[in-house]
Image (cartoon, rainbow, N blue to C red):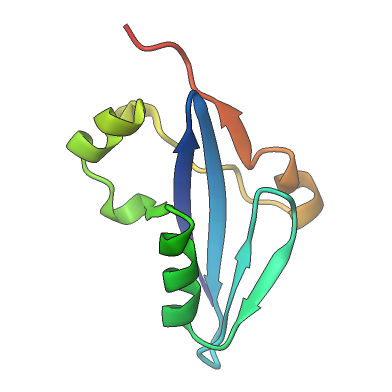
Length: 98
């Protein structure tokens, strides 16, 4: 099992999503509402995230981060834990940039 973090922004709000790829090749996305959405493949889960205007944290460069109002140097995905505890950390207010 492998986890990837994805993010989207809406104004000064950062929204996280966790993509989990299972050994069998299926995938699931844990979204900001605490729902776990199943997908038949990693590709279909990625496509759904991109359709919703999410970007992979691993693929985010400084220019993209600046456009979104994010300080890439301080960006850290929510701390792992059980999904109930994680739900409250999936939406974050971004600090004011100077």
